Length: 392
Image (tube, rainbow, N blue to C red; front, side, top):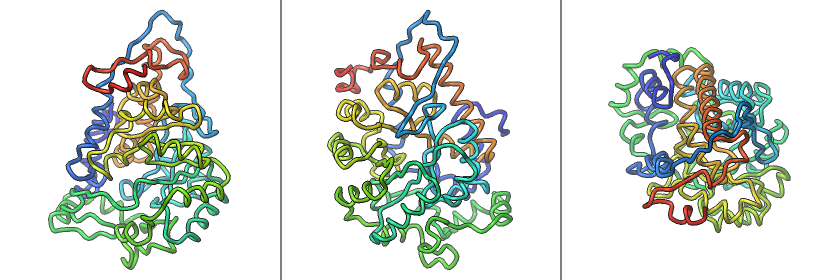
């Protein structure tokens, strides 16, 4: 399959599957337990219909938005995700460059494979640093100080990952960092030699944000041990409030799913929240962000920037989220599969397709700017989203 033949999310996914060894493809594609929440994330959008208006004069469309003080040329951004150079040698470099070209925000993870500083030099677009809360409070402060010196605009604390989800696909293949593959997993690597050649021909795999804390070379600290030993499951609201104050700028919580938690985020001074279930990779059976969006917008939408991610595969999905009150929408697998398939060229093609779909959708909806979208544009199916439908 060739990049020019990729016209949607599913095409990119198929191309990535052709190129990646099975354990790595399943790391991206998989989720927790029975993957119910993973499937629900996309299906939730199908339970809601758009109601277009016509004859509104839509020759010029402005899809720009401002979130957490950052001006984005389009209402989607590349969510921070881990281990990107495992998927393609360019990794975060490709994503940063593509986001810069399309004038949108991108994120670098604590488990990123390119440093905050290098990513900042590649792209002039707003940069998010996604980090985890460690038992070592000094390390938390050190990470924030480093991000500030690197010119990061937004700190994003992930709050739904105090322990790792039960990702059974990874258990079956033995996927881990460092690699500890089962025989079946090794066999899947063997049939994709091009990936191995790329992997070993480029610079060694490392985690620059954690290079003094997680040793990939000796294998003394694996990613799974990082989550179980270094992250602090006792993290509470007082801890986060202290971090918000220490940062003193745009601070976002990723993984908020209840109205009560959204209100607490406002109280401690956060400027944004991301409704997210971590792509279905943490608590299976949890609600989708889109299902929960109206309730949280009603609770805090006038006090804090409400963003969502999870399951977004089409421009119409973005329009539905914006109509419910989201300020912007995060993309994850939507750009990771194109990255795995074709590096920067793949990410750029995916973002271009999303831009075109959003522009086309706005014209067909009869709106010329994002702020003209509202719940009047939506109708929910009878058996779903009762509270959201009532509030509209």
